Amino acid sequence: MSRKIAVLTSGGDAPGMNAAIRAVARCGIAKGWEIVGVSQGFAGLVNGEFLPLAARDVGGLLAKGGTMLGSARCPEFSKDDVREKALRNLNRAGISSLVVIGGNGSQTGGAALNDMGFPTLGVASTIDNDLVGSEITIGVDTALNIALEAIDRLRVTAASHQRGFMVEVMGRKCGYLALMAGIAGGAELVLLPEIDFEPAEIAEAIHDAYRRGKSHAMVVVAEGAKYNAEALVRHFKTQSTGFELRATILGHVQRGGVPTAYDRLLATRLGAGAVDALDKGISGVVVGMNQGVVSTTPYAEIVGRTKGISPDLYQLAHVLSR
Ligand code: ATP
Figure 1 (cartoon, rainbow, N blue to C red):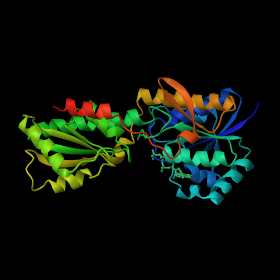
Figure 2 (figure 1 turned 45 degrees about the vertical axis):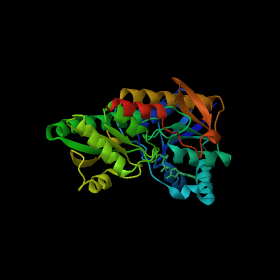
Figure 3 (figure 1 turned 120 degrees about the vertical axis):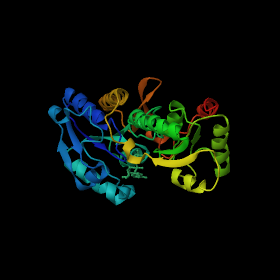
Figure 4 (figure 1 turned 30 degrees about the vertical axis):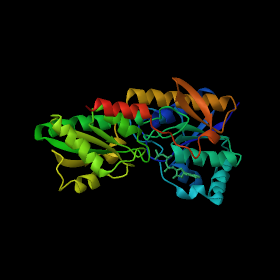
């Protein structure tokens, strides 16, 4: 059956989004469907910015971070009249379903469109890994590897100068990236939004590392943690922790970069999974990866929820820091 499917990327860009767009386009084309890209996320939907995606248009994308469709924050999409305008544009363009590649906010926007009667489904993509419905989301692996490379480099200079580094990593209100970077990077301490802490406890933990004979202290701070890296370094200016402390904020460096093999494969499988679901007449779900299998979770189980961190892994990070 001839169908016209639109695909957009929304929220923060995540390495691998391009592979997901490519998979949606080529798997859809293989079914005889017409595929249309939407520029700049929901903003492009509201402004009617559609572009045809043929097989050649999505070539050469696998090794590119970011998103070839562009992404944007579009807060007004939570208003009914704005979404109605988007719906009019979709209907006028003869589009029958929409694939939303993005994180929590984006899937909430997709769910709102689906509730208005337009068949929509999501592909789990955010470097934060805070989205329920997929154990791992597109972009996490690349962002984690970038954070790790920075941590490894900082440790070299930290050990040479007996310094402590507070390395701030992205992740919004979720500590997943910080926790995993802390474990894989051998951090002395990880500070997460999910775990309450006071500066005195941090100072004591760093000082304790010094007393145990460590040549450096690496503290991985999640961006959503109670205190940020710079504030903590300022706070400890006059306090002895054994190490001279410095702050490094990785920020958006974590978003760019060449997607890892893992992210390319994950994005490809989830993009293909979205086409499979649409082919079976399924919408109102997010396509994710669970226990190694591409699976779908209804929007109702996703919207308004965020994934927590594993207390066992947090405990492990603490034990390993000895
Ligand atoms: P990331 O966290 O990786 O940046 P995200 O998808 O969670 O990804 P957000 O900025 O939270 O990013 O959301 C992206 C877009 O989704 C928003 O700019 C807005 O257009 C839309 N959106 C968010 N919340 C809602 C909502 N409640 N109703 C409708 N649309 C929404």
